Length: 294
Image (cartoon, rainbow, N blue to C red):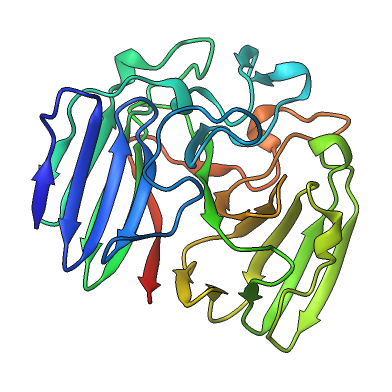
């Protein structure tokens, strides 16, 4: 395992067995995912802002994700405020800690902006390379002595493809529940699909809208993206929801999510669909893995 954490340009790197991951300190956002020099992310390895279009690579989402109604939500009388995906995407992380197989980025409880999230729930976000796969893991600790904490979180990675209409997005067999969200807010409508497995079952021409899909009824949650001699296997065994999104032909976002956007009309923060409860004094740890191949 090779590390670069002191380059001075706000970039950290981990590398093992030909797999190289580059991470920005701002937002702890992965912006490079390479195997033997071949990039897999949209604008892989280029942290500069584009002239137009989606400006990110793999946005870290939390302590809520997607959108809040009028950019605020009531949480037991406190108001949680924020734009898309929460404050983590703009958080300036300190130098990460080193693990045997990767790096861990930390948000201490006293650095959580009180209007962004009112409880003492620090986060450890780790990127680790194990047996040719990248594991991304979120670990929240509820330091509140008497309160159940609630969080939503996930990753919003965009993967380079030649054309979405030509790439293969392969889904395993199981029960999928699509949640409709006009204007990016849930309206309560769902559509259940009992799927035998295979190519992407939703109308790709509905992008740049989002497909918000519950996958808890899928027994073996291994997804696959294939394009131009490259493939990515996603191990979503711990993931309850996946969002598919794009606003261009040359990338597709496949987003593991622990939670969903706000509703129209909105509900209290602790009642948001998919919100993850954490008992007092306990830790919630969830993650997923990406395995690239050529």
